[in-house]
Length: 404
Image (cartoon, rainbow, N blue to C red; front, side, top):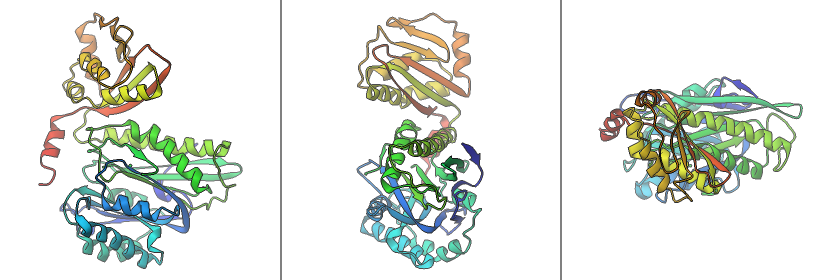
């Protein structure tokens, strides 16, 4: 697998663009468009939050036939909890893009991110679409990536190339997410956005399966602040222009494609953590020897989501007791007498108590920018990993004044 430049426009047959349409006070790009030359097989993973933005609901409707050809996304306004008008505005966005692109309205997917509860200035979006379309470019991924950002400090894009038989296949993606991140997405019902393009020929069923597997193993393992967004989603368009033998489930080609998709998602997920609001540290929580895969995942997520632990990280305080407490309330099978906790490579707890270590050793570990915590439950054979960051004073400042 080869890493490429170009993000969502690296695969054959895709163009993209991003512009400022008037939503953001900062006057930074706030509207993005990705378009395929051909109608695509498509799939989506969406938030499981029971309060869902209109774009999530509408996209599920548009994806009933597993087909799409374009993705239109705005930032600076989530268009969520905006009543019937919010749904009308989402459909107006899709309709306006469809008219200019000469596509069917249902083949345009829509995404929004930003402040909840504020009416969407849809007129500004509709008026900007002709120029947005006019600027579509085979090198437009960077502009599109910029157009979906909110509190992110950097744009996130990636692309890879690999072989399916004798054909070269490419997958590209852009993503955003720096706060309100605790994705829990499913392909039936994923503020974190990720838009994926591929020139692979793949069945709709295989695309949904690959997406579900990749999301579960990557985006669903991260947490920044424990808040699940109303707008989280991952959308994938596959136009088949690589002309490979069509990928179907349970084949070697499917495994190759799935591995590539997962590799991209994992890198983007990690970049979200590193770019998290106010974050100063990147933290990996590894759980070993759990009684079940579900238990391993629950423990990893509990530790990663512990506010007390995340505050200790910011303060460089190696307070492993907060890790032990999070393990205990995760709802997993836990025996404190069998559990071992490591900070970096240092064993700090076993046999139900602490292991004596010089404070300076542990302080140095927690002062680092990249920290690994390992919890060995000692009651089974299953493992899981979660990624998180610290809670800083900057995080509080950013989120205490988000609307102002």
